[in-house]
Length: 265
Image (cartoon, rainbow, N blue to C red):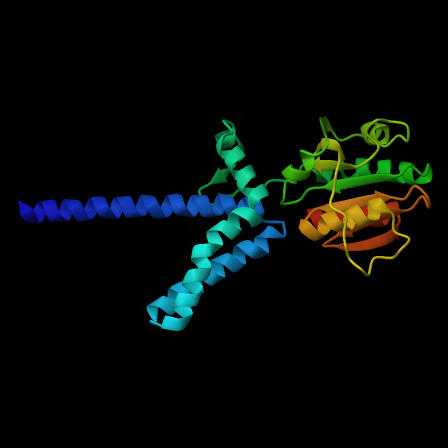
């Protein structure tokens, strides 16, 4: 009888451990989804690396390193709250979202089914709008989300929630319009928000003649994996930024080719 109870106890323990591991893996995966495509992903990976090193050091009973890394990790919790404040806020909002299950219907465990990016069909529309605004010397700043959904930047602007169209983009950036200042943020095939505030790059190597739109485009792409398209009001040229680098004076066909190659990967 005692033997059966012991086996039963071990079995229950193993089930609990299995559930514990699965729940932790899901939590870790969702946290990774929140920070991937942003500058925070490097910090996230660095923290995991430090934690693993600490465990290895403890296993080999290396007292000095174990003590130092242990103190770093114990104090690091407070630092995490400060560094990841926007991501923590977004994660808590996600947990409170009743549509979270619906948004995960295309996932099976940890594998995401490959679907066509809805943005692909909108590339020609965006390029045509950019070409028209460049010819009219209408200043514009268009941000296209990739892995990072840019929620913290969308919140700074006026929500739009409209399907992408030439008329909508040209109307938003019309010189006397109420939404022409700031950036438009596009996620998938939807214009999520207009008049969004973006961080301005502090690179010392940026040319002095770059305007605020160019600096904001570089600043955003330094902090996320998004793409920013800039239409110069003074020169009537099209430029785009990715990974904190600006490619200037591109033609409509060059912009189209770049977007197709980027989003078809």
